[in-house]
Image 1 (cartoon, helix red, strand yellow):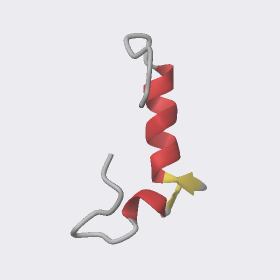
Image 2 (cartoon, one colour; image 1 turned 180 degrees about the vertical axis):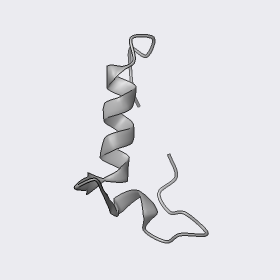
Image 3 (cartoon, helix red, strand yellow; image 1 turned 135 degrees about the vertical axis):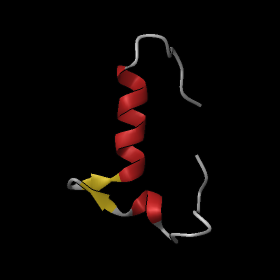
Length: 39
């Protein structure tokens, strides 16, 4: 995941459904049974 979006600054840290977008992405990855590690 990129630290900063070029078109939407701070996008990954903005609240989306009450939590930062990056947290929703990480949670989705952790819930996927085919992914065993996130670096």
